[in-house]
Amino acid sequence: MPLFQGLSAFPITPADASGRVDTHALARLLARIQAAGADSIGLLGSTGGYAFLSRDERRRAVDAAMAAVGGKIPVIVGVGALRTDEALALAEDAKAAGADGLLLAPVSYTPLFEDEVYEHFVVVAKAGDLPLCIYNNPGTTKFTFSNALIARLAKVAHVDAVKMPLPADGDFGAELSALRGTTPPTFSIGYSGDWGAAAALLAGGDAWYSVVAGLLPAEALALTRAAQAGNAAEVERLDSAFQPLWSLFKEFGSFRVMYVIADLIGLCKVSPPRPILPLNEAARARVESALDHLAASANVAASRRV
Image 1 (tube, rainbow, N blue to C red):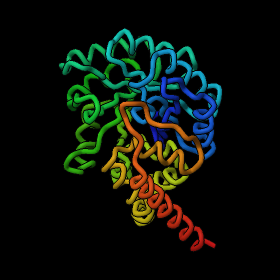
Image 2 (cartoon, one colour; image 1 turned 90 degrees about the horizontal axis):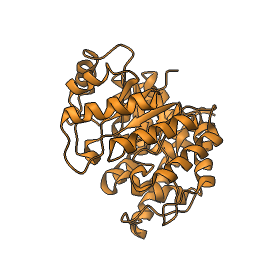
Image 3 (cartoon, helix red, strand yellow; image 1 turned 90 degrees about the vertical axis):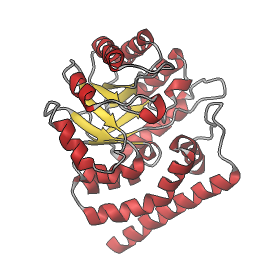
Image 4 (cartoon, rainbow, N blue to C red; image 1 turned 120 degrees about the vertical axis):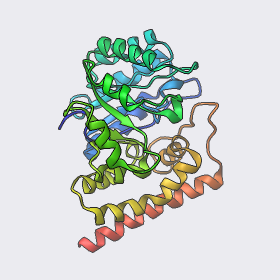
């Protein structure tokens, strides 16, 4: 399967209060994703808290990932940084460690112009010399890629994909048609925003860049495969099981919720990087209830197959 296709799972990056990555805990999370059969791992994406980590810690995370699952599942590494030279160095680090691909967001304190973003991507793509996915994440970066800029970047060597936010009007078909009309046939168009992923895949999206798959890869993979098969009834059933969790993602931000899930399912007990605060006990109870709902739905489906 091409690199930017199917289910790409984005785990948290367990770290202590000083930003020191717990490489053993990270390896456990990645092994779980690989064992579930996800199509790729999105390491050091927004869910991975890349912006909170130093270059040295990001390099340690990549090295640990490649030692744990390298060659068993493709690893796509986020290399976003404020400065172009920093992003370039991170891309070189990822390549040296054996990463399979790169994910680049245009992070900036000062609002960027399109030409600035274009030149930033050209430099990093050349330095990384790996398949690269455009990270269109306006909620975090405050920069929105126009279709024209995506089409322009799709002509740059190594820029092979885009990770899109959910369209405001929910019209995946129109957006996919517009983007595919101006990009090469091999250019991959995938989506993030877990609560809209099923609809994006059913509409013909190439990939789901999934937060929840970073900790619940088997459940996310079942939803992915049903959507890829065009099984709308099964997609509706599976997506409804996730609804309480999607609601919490929207209310608190998936980043905070993922740290609670990691603790509740016994994978690791770490806090998000400050200034992000852990969710309170009332919110944690709601996350636990959402996980129970998901598990109960899976058990009901299993019993029907017996």
